[in-house]
Image 1 (tube, rainbow, N blue to C red):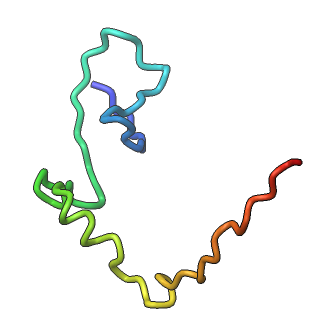
Image 2 (image 1 turned 180 degrees about the vertical axis):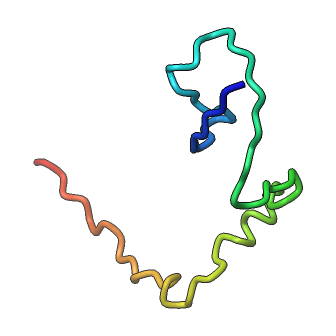
Length: 77
């Protein structure tokens, strides 16, 4: 048995393998993660996602400049 260690980032639930591993090769995979995986119930509901949008923001971050609109349109004569 041979071992290859690689680091990868999951994209669309897939991990790219090195090109040196040919198709049809039998692999045993061990996944090690720095952060624990999120469960399906963690922030999965819309209300929970919306509630977390402003977490850590200050009133200054949320301040909007006064909007005066676009003004009167100028029409070609």
